[in-house]
Image 1 (cartoon, protein in one colour):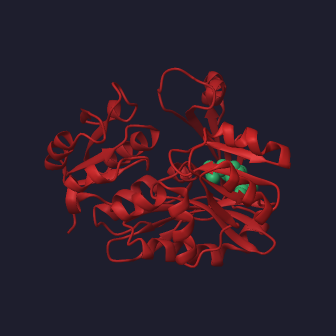
Image 2 (cartoon, rainbow, N blue to C red; image 1 turned 90 degrees about the vertical axis):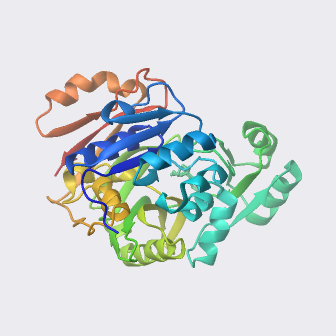
Length: 352
Ligand code: AMP
């Protein structure tokens, strides 16, 4: 059922993705209610309503759900069970969330959904890691199954001597061991799926990471990526269908000479889609809202020839005045306070 303007959208998580979603909602005449355990999350300052509570506080979630017409999330490390009190108001549903928050379950799911992934194993002990090195070869990367993001909870094993240090580096947590991929490029498919099962994908986006953090995105993505586009989009759409996903879903890929390999999925809007705010006819934030509000999906195509997005990470943000002075640069600052190393503080989009 279509939710008309004036309705209230609840957002679990108060980071920059929630902030940009709330800005898109305001433009369409919707109100937002942020739910986050922190005192002054950056999404709350641009939203009309804010509940400060822990994500597993069922009483607070019940009250929050009663005050919202639909509830969505802007990050995936949320405890699944307490969210059941939100019932059918939660979009995307719990399946997408549960799958995306455990790298082992996610990889097994992706294979079942017909996507190709790099060879991998679940590991729970140093013996398992040694066995994975024997079976998968080197290099491999260990990633904790849960709570990893932006390169956190990851350690590379390049020679047999690195095994112990890598296992210590991830804190002996249950993990996946993945064969290192010698990729030509990294790219993502940001795709929206409506409740009726219609999908629309944004143009393929090429991504560059440094120390596990997205630094730069570009559209068009270049020939090495474009030639894999049809396969990758089909794969993203199949994943969204199997999850019965409603909203935006992001699938990150490695482009290899043998085709696209899925690295990971995020059941939400994504940093690699930030360029769509100015660069696409409908932004990823508005598209997500359209899907969860049962509005028709918008046109995801480029408004110009292309776009680039540079993340402002940690102290990069100190150069904000240079970007603001640059003609044509679209500057987004999240007002997150302290510019700690590795923290995403803003981004700059340039249309080409
Ligand atoms: P992730 O948190 O899984 O997205 O990993 C962060 C980044 O580390 C990726 O975007 C890649 O640049 C790199 N990376 C992760 N897994 C692999 C892999 N199996 N092979 C090569 N590079 C990887």
